[in-house]
Image (cartoon, rainbow, N blue to C red; front, side):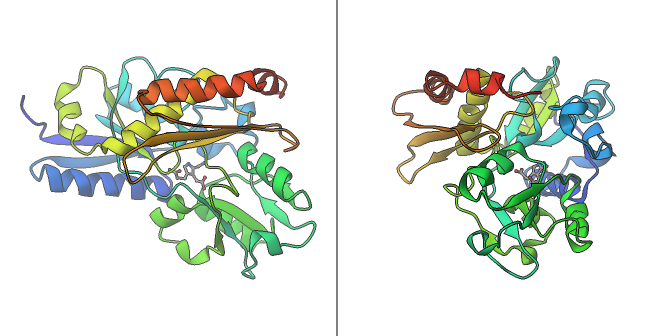
Length: 311
Ligand SMILES: NCc1[nH]cc(CCC(=O)O)c1CC(=O)O
């Protein structure tokens, strides 16, 4: 099998997405110094549309155009945040995951211009977020705070915060690390305070099925522990069949002994109902662990809860 001379990498064009591509280029360059790379940035529906995602195609709004460029042969490799890849349906036909890079921080961070922590925020503080996962968890834990809709890439959200559109923000630590803006973080929330989204902090490398040259060249960037965790989390999401308005959170973790476990939660949007399940894999494969935790949540009523939310 010959290595390709050039790999054309397609991605969203936000500063975070382009930083992700630079990480891939650096890791690929270290592994295969002979392979040249070229970056093809594209704008996605999710980048253009600033309203509710449920009004456009919802899930897939951040990946559709990128996958289309890959399938059209305009690029050989797509870099996605796993968090942005729909989990209720298979990957677009003709594409496949070639690798998941080593996972970054899965936690969310609070950004408050005066440096207050979440518990110190006064009644009525406006948190800029359109994430149903963050809104539901804040409603459950801090009902005196008010969430106001906010979309756009992290840099844009910080501009909106500075303009007074909100009093504080919640953003992923990993995203802030990627754009070099951890300086704005007031408090990193523990996973118990704010359960992360499925696929948090993981970058996926996606290729055309059958493009074995590219797949073989990039598969060495894959990280085994991240692969196991991501596989368990995405299987959970697949079995739960959530939609773009269903607040679902969950993360798999590998402890020091190498034991895999998965915690997941399903919420009502008002945060009044919280379903919660946690299991160790033991002898189970990551797929079976994901299925098992999803079934535990379904037994607690997750199906009725998810279907009862307008979308
Ligand atoms: N919704 C956009 C998005 N997609 C992935 C991340 C964070 C990085 C990651 O988890 O890989 C973010 C920003 C955020 O939620 O603050």
